[in-house]
Every structure is written in structure tokens, then in C-alpha cells.
Image (cartoon, rainbow, N blue to C red; front, side, top):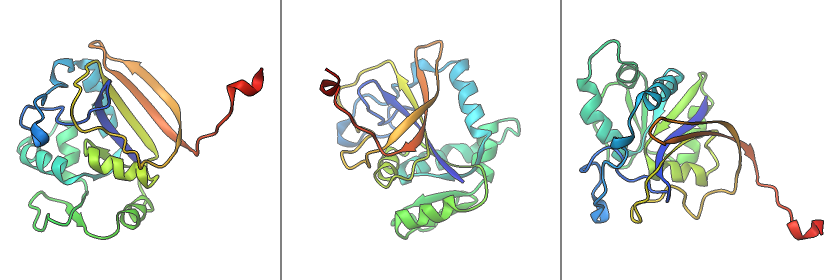
Length: 205
């Protein structure tokens, strides 16, 4: 399976608590819910399309807890997101989650690189990560992200958790697609192409 990560960030790279004020108040973060004003049909259509390609989910512990508190209550058979989240395998790297109640959940307790590499070796289309900024940062550090859907919202917050750690593995990505929504969110899809290449503009003089 290909590992894809879908992440909401601000212009200044913050991923913390896009969905609501109480989603993640750690470090006194006061801006929770910053993505809400930008919801529109373009955004919804993109997310429906993403969930149409998934065969399994890989979720960070915080995102898993947020999802597990909401999505099992959504029982509409025509909801493409709820249907897949509630029925497909969900893998959660965690040393503290011991008795998950959400169906089809498996806790990963081993080495992250080994566990995720084994999942990617299974047959299927996409192993998808949603939210889970800290986990995405770790996966970028390990060079395990194949495709990155980066949804950049037209807002600057100044404080909050940033997506890209300094430890991220130097990687080159190709721009597979780019589209704006009616509210100004820019949806860029990047496919990893390997290592960065370097040059020197001064050498051309």
C-alpha cells in the first residue's frame, strides 16, 4: 500500500487543532477551530475523493481519540467518510492505548519504521494518515510518506505546533496536482520522488 498523509496547515505551518476550540489546547493554544470558516463544497468533494481510495488508516493517538469519540456515532450509510472509518482497519502507534473500543483498531507497540513498513507491504491501495501531525512528522523523518496532501488555509496564527520537524529526512517531492477552493484553501498534492538535488545559481554566470 502507498502511504498518504492528508494534513491541514496554516500559512505559517501550524497544524494544531484545526477542527474546534477544545481539540488540542496544549501549551495554551487559543486558536482551535481555525479551519472551520473555510469549509465549502470544494473542500468536501476533495475529502470524499480521498476517502474513496483508502484501504486502511494509520492514526496518531490524539487524532484517534478525537475520531473515536465522534465517527462511531455517525451511522448514515451514505456517509462515505464514516462508512470507511468505522469499517476499515485502523492502526495506532501508542504505548498507552491498551483497550480500544472502536471496531477494527489495532495498536502498534513496536518500532515505528518496522511496523509501518510491514503495513505498506500489504496488498491494497492506500494506507492513509489524517491529521496526526506529530505522527506525520515522525513518518517524514523516516522517509515513509509517499504522497502528501497539504491543505494550506489562508490564515496565520503565530503560535502552535508546526508540521515539519528539523529532523525530517531531506526529500524531494513532485507536484502532482494543485487546486484552490472557493474560500481560498490551496490543496496541493505532492508525490515523493527521492532525494533533493542541489546546484549553484552563481555557477551559471
